Amino acid sequence: MPQRAKKAGTAKIRSAAFRRIRADHSSELAEDYVELIADLIDEKGEARGSEVAMRLGVANATVVKTLKRLQDSGLVTQEPYRSIFLTGDGWKMAEDGRRKHKIVEGFLLALGISEETARIDSEGIEHHVSEETLRAMARFLARKGS
Amino acid sequence: MPQRAKKAGTAKIRSAAFRRIRADHSSELAEDYVELIADLIDEKGEARGSEVAMRLGVANATVVKTLKRLQDSGLVTQEPYRSIFLTGDGWKMAEDGRRKHKIVEGFLLALGISEETARIDSEGIEHHVSEETLRAMARFLARKGS
DNA sequence: ATGGAAGTTTAGCATTGGCTAAACCTATTG
DNA sequence: CAATAGGTTTAGCCAATGCTAAACTTCCAT
Ligand SMILES: [Mn+2]
Ligand SMILES: [Mn+2]
Ligand SMILES: [Mn+2]
Ligand SMILES: [Mn+2]
Image 1 (tube, protein in one colour):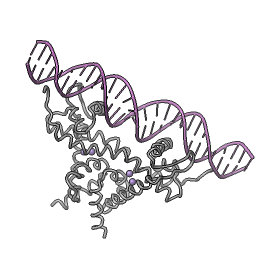
Image 2: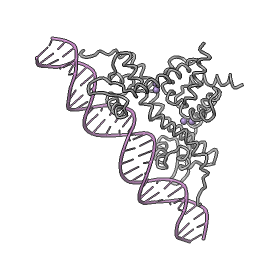
Image 3: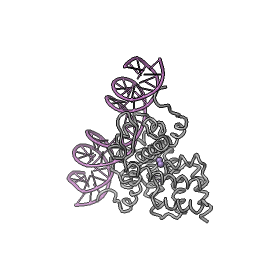
Image 4: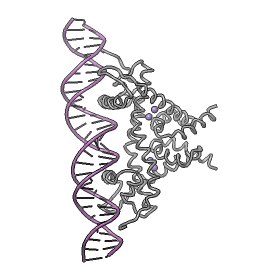
């Protein structure tokens, strides 16, 4: 066994966290899209790509390309020049996103964070909390939020 | 003004959260790399690319390519077939990462989360907490952690 | 001293998620 | 009912982050 000998035991375990992060990242964008589309449908009756682009702060063309991927994943349906619809799976993901989002944002507020910051931080944190952490946040919220 | 009229007022404000998320994501990988390299140097005296790859759970070639970018950003220095060093900026970023990471992980533990989950969730959350939220977590920690 | 096993880099590919500019529809309005 | 403003898509570009297979170094053991 020439050169340095590695223990390599702990490393595999340690890498689990980073693997989860990479998995989270690959679903994150989809979650934000479907949640946003659900909001638009509820608020305005329809979801237009340009409105999605505006709220996300990206170019129209970016949204078009991403929606094509979401369509391939079976989360949305659309026809050219028409508004966007969610599939059953799309609605399910949107509802789950809303649930997580609400817990995380409510938790941050209960912790004493300002509304502005809670809104911004929760948008990122929501994608990286396990169910266990979510439960703990909900518990804290129930106890505190009389 | 044909077709639908957009209000376009609230959208720009709302998009700020998503812009921050995208910014967070682009610094996230660099933060994890330098923190990991700092840990390896402290633990083993040197940081080898293959060890970084193992702990992150990615291929060696991926680490080589990423380290090249980090070198261009002035965070690490390296020579072919040799171990990796951090620049001053690299150490600064690593220290700041450790600080945040410790607060977030400690906070989750104080909230009653299991060690395993706290370790995993904090690895993702750490990159999406503002200083305001970090302060609130530290406060909670100080109050609770007798 | 040196052969070769093991560690490291290079080459080449794929996907995601951004962008701008140009082409293309749609629907309001005159 | 037709022109056209304005919303939408296409085309083509780029950077980041992953992978595998092949080439290349290093350094230990003989
Ligand atoms: Mn959300
Ligand atoms: Mn989000
Ligand atoms: Mn960290
Ligand atoms: Mn991390």
